[in-house]
Length: 114
Image 1: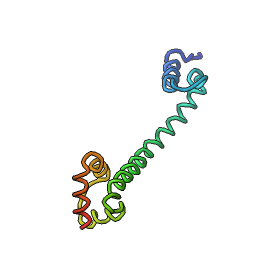
Image 2: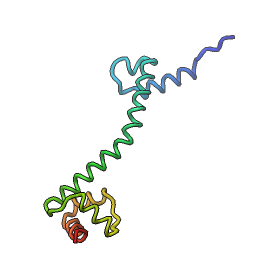
Image 3: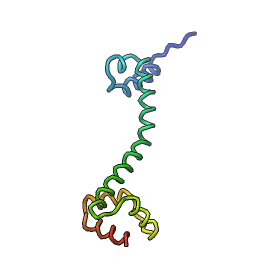
Image 4: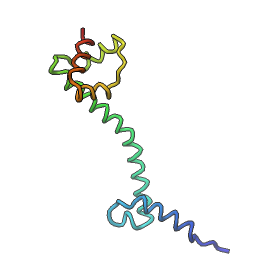
């Protein structure tokens, strides 16, 4: 006896179509194409979760460097001095300090570069 898909199959297909709901044209209506779209999108999402970390680190480094340049210091020498003096502060906090509290950042930079 043949078993038709019915409820379960429809639910599975509808969940895939729901995931592809933002896609343009047939990519969100046709199950087969929507499934391909969702697979491709999940690959991009996986990749970009890792790239986001990379991008933020680049941003923090740029902000720190921008805060150091008026003081006459370079980013690489500043980080080397922090490591040498065993000052443990991450780049995210350094960049926040450089933006929101430049006076304190200047104190930290001059202390590290002594």
